[in-house]
Length: 227
Image (tube, rainbow, N blue to C red; front, side, top):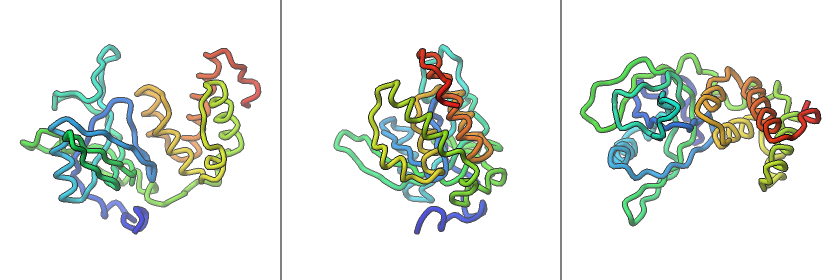
């Protein structure tokens, strides 16, 4: 059963979920995020998730620019209000005690409160209603300017001397391409959050293009061919 078949409406998801506050990381519907889990608090979170709904929320913390923490130790640290719930779709235990998992995105959520718990990790009460359309696979793909997106992506890869399987990219659906690129792109927390909170695929693609063009311009590449 695919995630789209398993979760068809907000009521299919738990109202309270454990969250992994991770700076510079987002998740989006049907995109994947590999995670290397080694901290005891998050190893316990994964154990609990695997014995339950297998759902974890990815939510960025709000940290000062000079704070280099990836995941704040303080449970009182402020978190963003919008994140994305994902299901653990791959799980591997390593001999050194680490766990490697893959989260596959289901839908975005709004945090509406934090549950009081003695767990070492944080559990949030969430609402999926605002993002119910995330549960419809491929919604809005036809409104994406795919030609321009691919043109900008190709230029970005060439300028940064990055290799990729272009044939696979060309075959990918608009939704998979946009969401996967948004999850993987090497931008900062604010840019990542803008991609996460974009209202639809077309808007997210436009943010991706704008970020790539800014990056190209800063590297001295002419943006005239990208329009």
